[in-house]
Amino acid sequence: MLTIFEQVSSLKVNFHKSMLTGVNVSASWLTEAASALHCRVGSLPFVFLGLPIGGDARRLEFWKHVVDRILTRLLGWKSRFSSLGGCLILLREVGGGSSTYFWTDNWVGGIPLRHRFPRLFDLTTDRWVTVEEMGRRGWEEGGAAWVWRRHLLAWEEESVLECSVLLHDVILQDHVDDRWRWSLDPINGYSVKGTYRFLTIVDSLPNQNLSVDVWLKQVPLKVSLFAWRLFL
Image (cartoon, rainbow, N blue to C red; front, side, top):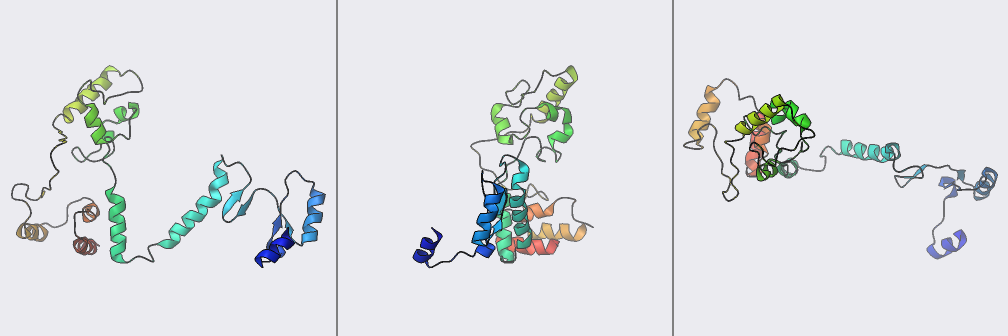
């Protein structure tokens, strides 16, 4: 078959780089065949075109070689082939698709609920549920949003009541569009004069993750690029 293949395709097999692996054959026959073909004797498992052949694909060790190669490629990329604006767009698109989660995000008073109520976080069956889903189910006392792994103790029920009171003033409006609010002046809104006064009067910028605000989708590209460089 090799001779016919070479005649049809005009390609030749480099036996010195080839490997002969047998399945359910004796070691002596495999050695003689490899000697006749002038190639090496292989064994399972082995790697072919970057993928493992043979072995148990259900075990994590089976895919370690593939994962290591992917990590190596990603570490070597480092955005070498993207411009500064291209990197900005990539980060905005990746970071903009994240959801707001009920227990882990800083959406109530700047502290995640999992830190305020760690016991409830350990007992809930929906640790990674979104705020939207919890609001739809109902997070009032006795609401369908509260599902626990076991019956709560008396002091744990008090924690649920405290959490429900904290969420009482949170209203998710389905038919009202979101709007921007300038935190430095919530009443009058943004102004260049007010922003300049804030930047020149305060000794240091507020302790918050400013990079998150820079990568907002609604911010023009040139503005985000300027602010990013300014903060750096």
